[in-house]
Image: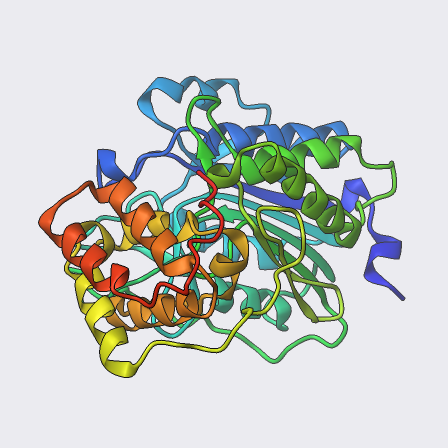
Length: 387
């Protein structure tokens, strides 16, 4: 029997996680994930999920601490110990048909390609985190006796971890995972692909992905649970509309989605609203010229920094951005970026203008300009970046 056929709100359990304040300090703080988590909990309550079946794990900013007292459901801390306890100990003791997990906060992808989510007590010296792939495998296994159907919505960045620049490596725990349960339905949606930033709208105190998904769920039909595949399809069209409306820099272009049968899909579109097209020409740069441009690019401090590098890359037009194969090593990432831009007319000069926008006319940027401007004049400038 299809697990969804037996699911009901009364036999639904949910964890909603919203981490705004991190032990790492002000640079890590976000304004919105805790509010998003509460809004998601309120939506579950509106669909008749019992309050006792919902737990909110929150770390709000000081100015948002009123959420802790106003929450319509029970609240627990969002530190590593609490989150691990809920995911690995408490949930396996629960009895239900459907499990919802909502998570808003910081995340990244490690050098092995595994998705990580930072907990509220993470610092630069001790970057405590949960391995999403490890947790998903645990919940697909016999270690989780219940919850034949699971829905995971994760609104977190998937920036690449640069081990060469990090003060510490990422701690990793292997969970006591048993053999997989045949037929277990586990649907997962990420707001961003590896290498990407999930946008948080600070002025409105919400994650853009969370905001749009919650709007969609609130308007969904009464069937329980909502059809996630249909929701992903609608969200794709919604984000295309947002991009065409001028939110190019603030709109995710990708959803990573695992359906009920274990198949994975990538929903990716460019800034003009069409599906991503392959490069329009073969590479033209000689190896020595490519090396010169890569060296000049890496000399720009704003590009060497992993976070600002993500911003620079994300400002490329959609078809270029979607074709870049990202890597946690800054040099390999730069090689991939330059070689990809080489295959799209005008993209290298477009990259130069984006770097100039982000870094100014510094000596390093001028050197990069010299390396790129020496390209054959037959290469047209092409379209402007989506600024």
